[in-house]
Structures are given as structure tokens and as C-alpha cells.
Length: 103
Image (cartoon, rainbow, N blue to C red; front, side, top):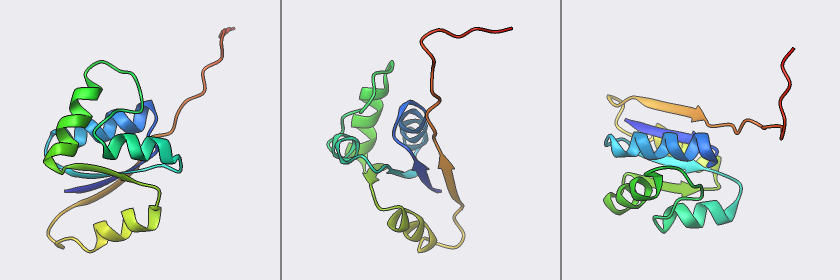
């Protein structure tokens, strides 16, 4: 299965890394060139338990790469074998207030 993950923050990077670790071909899409370069060098743009090792291993195996070109990500999936599934997901960061009040 080919998967495009839009967003390389905490949700997107962890999702992309975990999908790639399971053997899927994953393209991470992000407008921030620094994040793209880190991922393509096998480095995680975030700090999360085990994600650095996961990104490194999956990039080395060729299961994970990143781009800023959303059209490339979507069209590369469409050119795959028609018997394979295609999934596009959005990993949107959730803003966190310094102090949350409920009630």
C-alpha cells in the first residue's frame, strides 16, 4: 500500500514512521523544507520515544521519504499498481494552550 501523510509534526511524523515501519511505502508532505530535509536524511523533526530510530530505519529501507510537493505525492500514488490500495491522511497539529480551563 502507498500512503501519503500530509503534515510532519507530531501526528504526521509518528503516523508516517509507524506506517513505514509496517512495510508500507510512505511519502510525508510538508511545506517546511527543514522538516523534509531531516526526514530524507533519516532524522526525525520531532522528539518522541523511538521515532528517531523508526524514521532512520524506514528511510534506510526506502519505505519513507518526504517532499513539499503535494501533487507529486498524490500522483505518485496514482501511478502505482491498480491492485494496491492508496491512502492519503492528514496529520494536523493540535494547538495546545499553556493553561487549559474546563467548565
